[in-house]
Length: 592
Image (cartoon, rainbow, N blue to C red):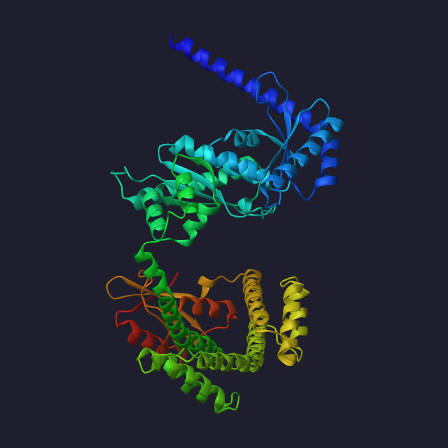
């Protein structure tokens, strides 16, 4: 029996699919025939036209029909409006009989469609959803998306949906192909017991919004479906309080689905039977004062914060450009005077602008100013804007100075790298250091032409300063990378390894120190077995003694070894004594 039921279900699904495929083919067939009709309607009635679509047959065995959707006739006199509507409908049907004689043509006006929705007759919506548009101003696709979304919600939450209502530009007749689709969903929360009303609203809202995106994709449109979700208890409170949004929703909304509550609300509003409570009226009367109080508070907040931070941050940035850490706001004016006013890079009046902003913030914070004069705020903003313009010029001046100093420093460091590299190769630098570099390294393929180009560029910028800090930073990184590569090639060329210059030393309780004696400087890692061990740098004097102890890093040792030319360092009795003083009397050098 179970297999038989399954087979019947599969057969039924197969028949439905075959029928849907047949209807789709019939719709496409009619849409191709309808082109002359569409062209004629567009030519004569483009202003009145909302869309033309091929709808499925309303009875089995019948052919698809053409439905022409039209704007509402603008006529106050009801009888004249009916007459004009009939005349326009007859003209359109006549064009249909001439252009596509075997296809039935119907026409409907938007107000007629809405009237059907008011009366709970939604069959036309279903037909439009299943139809194949051959001309659409954007309205048909939008209605399809809303209808698909409504059906999805009813399938999932039918017991909870009070009404699904269309609103916004589509209802007002102002929709464009790009307009958002505005809808309202009211959820019945009166019998919810297992969760709070807020929880049910948030839970269902997330699902409802997710399905809104799916509906637009299924309808084949890019418009956004905006869905406002209300719970019934909140809706009732809003009606009692005469909330303007809810009144607009009731007055203008079109129910695409109604469980029997929306239309009574709408009619009661039209009859004047939904009126605000005295409490709601008082609330609205008091809102004016409340709003003005908010304006006053916002004005205080603007006066307190905006001029202050708009001038403090750039001021701190200028001091940072000078190499100083960002100071406390209170100390900023003092440092501006010391760093810029004294050196005549900035005028005193601009520091006073900053001080006024700081003082205004302080006065508001401590309650000295209760009501802020808008004119004062505007003045502070205007002066702050002028202050920022002046700081821009200061930044330009500081930038030029920084560029000059950094360009010189970069050339000096690059030159030191080249001299160290020449020393490692036992070569002397000529008058033209760039030429010496080319001869010793580029011509012997130890360095690429790119390194030569970088050096020339650095040399040029150290004279012209026509560059930016960003470009100098980029050049520094590239020169460092190329020099490191060059030193590695030189070591390979000369068969030198970094460990060749390392001396090991045992001392204390099984401790091992690493020592490098590099002609003029010595480096000592006190205990190689510990990650946090001390690393020291010393100067080696003429006698071989280690002096001027300073903290060092592994990076410093690596840089020193990279540039070490391998010149001999004498290990004297003074050197041994220094090592014993540093490591202990039991110190023993390890060879090999």
